[in-house]
Length: 221
Image (cartoon, rainbow, N blue to C red; front, side, top):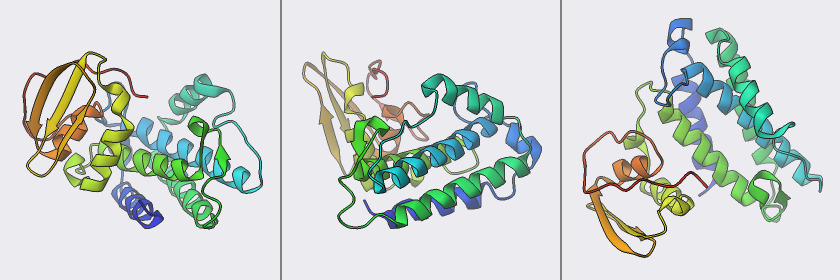
């Protein structure tokens, strides 16, 4: 996964939100209880937080992802969700552009530098950026769905989400092009398009049909 894929996803996101009006900003996302304003605010706040992770790591420093932790993160999303569409768009554009600029500063030998986001490093932080921008673009409910996800992204997301498989289940996800499995125990096989199976595993509505007995998944890691 390269920075150019993250940049393409970011450009798609910014284009998709460029002409929102206030009514659309108040409209429902695909996430229960969240409007599009909630999703946009979350993406913008995540982008600012990750920018700080990158910039501080390049200076040899570690900082918290969100000052005040998860409660402060959640409060900031609620506080920003009902802003006007123009304010939301401006915040998103500024935050995502700054994050892309920060990633451009990372040199070939910098990727192993540690960050506090998931106690990982800059390489994993770039992957997290890819996930956040890609998934939440679909969450906006503005016409982009998981059917747009590439095979590379689907396989990356499935592997990242392996801890969601229940302990006593051997989960097999079978698509026309890829068969993916995880876990040990009773075999449960689901069939469908790779994008639909990945969306389901990520806790999102699958655009197309999935056949098989879907188990209850564990929380996101």
